[in-house]
Picture: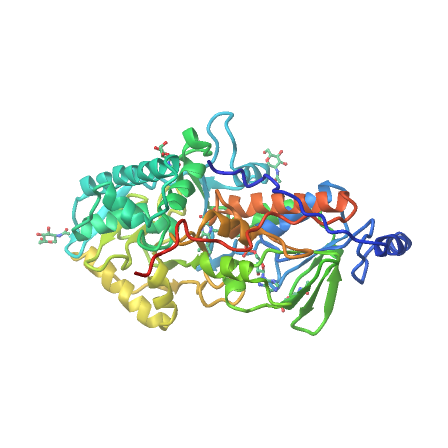
Length: 510
Ligand SMILES: Cc1cc2nc3c(=O)[nH]c(=O)nc-3n(C[C@H](O)[C@H](O)[C@H](O)COP(=O)(O)OP(=O)(O)OC[C@H]3O[C@@H](n4cnc5c(N)ncnc54)[C@H](O)[C@@H]3O)c2cc1C
Ligand SMILES: *[C@@H]1O[C@H](CO)[C@@H](O)[C@H](O)[C@H]1NC(C)=O
Ligand SMILES: *[C@@H]1O[C@H](CO)[C@@H](O)[C@H](O)[C@H]1NC(C)=O
Ligand SMILES: *[C@@H]1O[C@H](CO)[C@@H](O)[C@H](O)[C@H]1NC(C)=O
Ligand SMILES: *[C@@H]1O[C@H](CO)[C@@H](O)[C@H](O)[C@H]1NC(C)=O
């Protein structure tokens, strides 16, 4: 059975001694922003590190609970985190998240991102991923939709294999093993491209690299209403204020200017059982009674921020064992549309994962007349193209376009762009993916606090890792833990963690 991510695990209460009494008096004397750590303060200061979805929702949670002595510290010059837009030749496009994945079925559970989108009037459109698809290969447009349909059934079989293993408490495997056990063994370029569309296009990694159980959960808890999911629908933001507008408008409802520090890059985080101090790139130091680190898993993995003291072994093992994957949308703008009339297209290259998923934005549902087409690559392909000059990637992509449309004289694009998420030091990837060697206890350890320093973000979500709604729920849940901690008189509870994670049975070496 899956444990609810909102459940707060067994509390370990630190005794605080006399210090809290003396310090709370000082906090009353200076009720606004405390400049120093004040263990036991009645108005403790909370530093929220990162102003993405998790950070903004954490701030809102504190505010709703009457705790307004907090500060969001963010490196960029706006809130929203990975929700980033670009004016691409006159059309605002999304470099990061684009879809509300799983909306709501009747009065069932709603995706909170869908709720925010409705509240802030986001302009969005249903995107028909499975019903509006044209298939291609190296010879041009070739109808292999039957293979595509089969791959959809095979993905369902995969989640059933995973479900059986959960019921029987069997060890996790890779999704590749799961596919093979479900007798899905793609042997052609068409079958591989179809599988890619079902799997890698969502998880940003291959079935070999992904957990069978966690990938199936990732699908079920978001899309399958029989399994607690929101709905099997999606909505694509086409709002010209950008998808980020929903989180920025939400923030504008409660945030005061003094509660946000933008353009502030954190270099070190010192933490203890009594408080947290961060040092910025500028040399400035900021202290709080609590810290909530929402930096991406990629940032934590790559030592972009130094922790003092070093994080404990259990925490480092968890951080280095979840994967920060990369998902890259490559945008092209042409003088006019010459391509498919469906919303989506799949290109089957002999090399799996080579420029496979295409989407037309010059479509009546999206931006008709825009001349924009984009293609998505993931995983190792993303890492590979990020190391190449744009001109070389453009040449490769145009080679594929020309093989998809052999009878058309395809012009060069007037605009070409792709974001480099993997090398961006504020992200180091696009979102997390759960590998087969990552256990349920590792996830607890990833979201566990160390002293007064807490962690939240899409990667700490057991049910919704990778998604915007994962970041939302984690911001909410972990901030709720901090609120409880404060309301218990700053007797800081530890979220459950496992000091050591053992094998199911020891491996034998003889
Ligand atoms: C290309 C792409 C496509 C995606 N598609 C979808 C989708 O369609 N649907 C969906 O649901 N999800 C999607 N996601 C995932 C979604 O964007 C994330 O799950 C979510 O935005 C994560 O929010 P967060 O608050 O956990 O982290 P972040 O948004 O990363 O917030 C952390 C913040 O910390 C800041 N920061 C980092 N380092 C420092 C530092 N040293 N000092 C100060 N500040 C720092 C960052 O600038 C950032 O603002 C996509 C992501 C990408 C990149
Ligand atoms: C952040 O930096 C940008 C670019 O340097 C600048 O335009 C903006 O005013 C700054 N914002 C804040 C709040 O300091
Ligand atoms: C959204 O639209 C509704 C109805 O059209 C309107 O009442 C509301 O003020 C709008 N909200 C925002 C944030 O624009
Ligand atoms: C391209 O043109 C040739 C010759 O007219 C035709 O046989 C072929 O089917 C066309 N290919 C496509 C993909 O339209
Ligand atoms: C996912 O949902 C499917 C269909 O409802 C179910 O058969 C399967 O057991 C579920 N898998 C997991 C891992 O929960």
